[in-house]
Amino acid sequence: MNNKPEINMVIFDMAGTTVNEDNVVYKSLQKAINNLGHNFSLNTVLLNGGGKEKLQAVKDIMKPAYSSQEELEKDAQIAFAEFLEILKKAYADLEVSTYEGTESLFKDLRSNDIKVVLNTGYNEKTATSLLDKLQWKEGETYDLLVTADDVQNSRPAPDMIFVAMEKMGIEDANKVAKIGDSIVDIEEGKSAGCGLTFGVTTGAQTASQLETGHPDYIIDSLLEIKEYISLKNPAHK
Image (cartoon, rainbow, N blue to C red):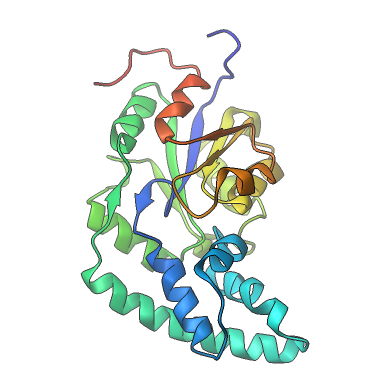
């Protein structure tokens, strides 16, 4: 217990980490991009777009196919606009779930006075539509949501983590843990100076891909973070 760091806030990515939506966002990205005549695989979309603000994700996925930055920017805007329409239709009937044990973990952390924050490369509208489907409420299920709409610079910049720290009254990033299913999540945590960074294998990227981001730990379930964080109160049943 003594060698576990004191953590006052855990920042969780959403899709692929806490929210299981069967990669519908990245499948929608893939469809919108390939409608322009490309043939990018879902694996390529996940590897190059995972965790990022979605317009930036489109650009990063499409970049190898373009020699002209001007053409890339133009087509990226077209693909992004179509992506939003495809996603809107997909979300109308989408059933989402959370990963086993996620809600009990949130309760356990919050009962130990550890803030639970959700952050995402989605815009606020997309993020809240997912949370509404799960019936998760700020102040009840979790403490704060931070989206790409809240910052000038999205991942891997640390801005979303700094917003969360300011709103939650936490001054020392060493007391913050960041967990996500993509390399860019890990890079975000490291750029903010988080005391712990975790890669989780439930979402966009594999353990070997996550390893290239050099997280402190790679885990297969969110529940494993309790092995690395000091919890003073008994586990929530």
